[in-house]
Amino acid sequence: MKVKDIAYHIEKLCPKSLACEWDNVGLLIGNAENEVTKILVTLDVDIFVVREAIDCGANLIVSHHPLMFNAIRRLTEQDASQKVLMELVKNDISLYSAHTNLDVAPDGLNDFLAKKLGFADTEILEPTGEYDGKICGFGRIFELDEPKKLIEIVNDCKNKLNLCAVRYCGDDDRKIKRIAVNSGGGTSSMNCCFEKNVDLFITGDFKYNVLRDACENNLAVIDAGHYNTEVIVKDLFFDYLSEKFGKDIITKSRKNIDIVKICE
Image 1: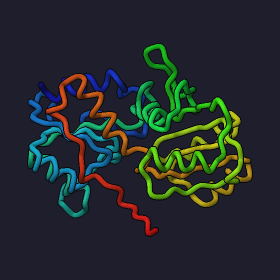
Image 2: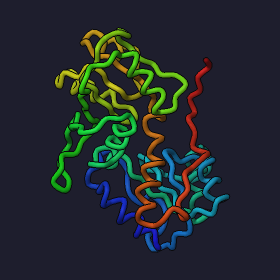
Image 3: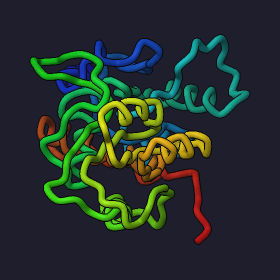
Image 4: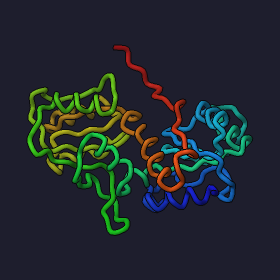
């Protein structure tokens, strides 16, 4: 099994052509012809994840967030990302990233998040195109059979994403029926929520002024966090690749943790 075989199956799920123009996806480091001994799947790539790959014998890392977005003019180990790049190269570890192409793809990360929260039969919040005869795009919208109080959904969200706390805004007793979700930092899709009469938006990375804008437009919000709504990508990668290559060759990163801490 080679790196290109892993890439082929990931790109069947989420072709690189679905990614945003500013994004950087695909095989970012390494040789497509290299034999794969073990795969480490992760949300982020940092020095701790790379050392974890070395320790567990993984020579391919599959991540959601790319390690580099902009051109790199030098490798001098003068900053953290340069050190990570050099460590990957020195240890002959390949890196493959599937980012916005995985976000928008049918059966990609947003569908995975919706199912994790118990939502099925969703529609696209912000369409971006079509793949394999299906509409793809950012976010998903789900309509409850019976309205639920906002505070009940807040607690459901906490439990299903294994969170100790979430930020939210809106009246606790407000009855919610139409819900939108968007993995990671999805606040740029908020206008779509207004246009599509969404009652509640679940995503991450809300600034104060954006929360106020949501409230003034009668949109309840659950800010479950960027990391918390995307760390499930480890499960998505593991489940998907295990079906193709077996479980023994794939491991989920334990060193990729949320750097944001909450004091309760």
